[in-house]
Length: 337
Image (cartoon, rainbow, N blue to C red):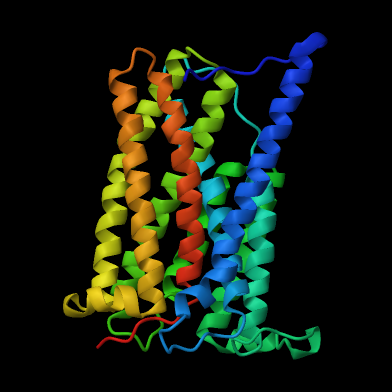
């Protein structure tokens, strides 16, 4: 399938066909987003079934907020990453898709605000504004990290509105660091090691997911048969291979820190965290297969841009991975047997 840039037609069946395509794409995106939201919302009860583990209050909502926060981090990081790749391409068109960074900053701010409200009520879902102790956020480590994420997304949005999108790197980096620290409390064994692994894992995932999404948007805008488009996809694929290796290594290391090798097989089926992790591993394996398929097409097909088809499926699968990652943050951490 060759990537073809849709052209606007003012009359006849061409304009109607384009409107139908646009409506179909909007409906497909809405269905995919809805399906993705159901994973963290309904996932905790399904993962906990039969394990004997207790679910945290509002686990589904917290998982959904984490998923939105991850997506809000991926979108601007991916745009900044691909812009840098495009600058390395000689003769690249000057056209760029409309940025989604401002919308991502708003979504990230609201998600971080929702998570901060949970922390402010002692990790309980607040029943009203009077239950939220904003001042208490400054008195705990988790509270300070939650406030850091709220402020970082607000600052990232201000940079976009001020016409300085490159300055987003700093607040977005702060969000990644805060998430890495939050995932590993000081009571954990070697928390700084765990935080470092999570930070590398999260940054590489954001570059991979957000980068692929924006790269495909750029390709669609540039049109079919575009040599710079094929060059951009090839350049991204080379970087993505390194990112996948880093994600795999840090993911395995983090798993073995939380699940000793002799208990991994049992915990993958008998704990909620293990079941969610197993689902994530299977999805990542699917993503890797799609990425390999796209890379083969990119190298061997007569039209390298036929790699667009598996790459688009890869984006959908990566969205599912992100939703399962949100689920992982909402289920109980496994006990080291």
